[in-house]
Image 1: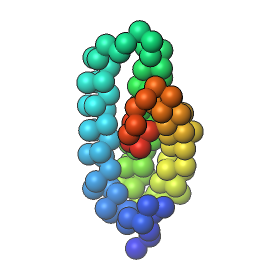
Image 2: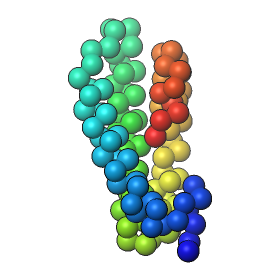
Image 3: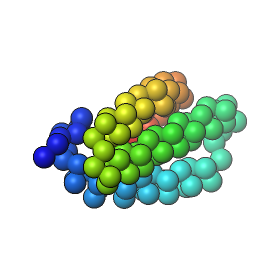
Length: 103
């Protein structure tokens, strides 16, 4: 069985990741309903955008895994690096301790 960068087999990713992507999308809906303090309003929008990019990448991981496309899984995993770094930097600057660990 091919093993993914996270050590999971493709069939496990194909089964688990689409649900995780759905949960991430649902959390984005909830987060976008919150009214942040004006001091962090611009960064809050960036945080939501980064989380959206991560949710999109997660969905691509799931789709690639469902199609048995290991190179597609690797590309999708790697595409998360930039948004994850931006999320972590923005969230940390605004005092969100664990936000950058998501995605």
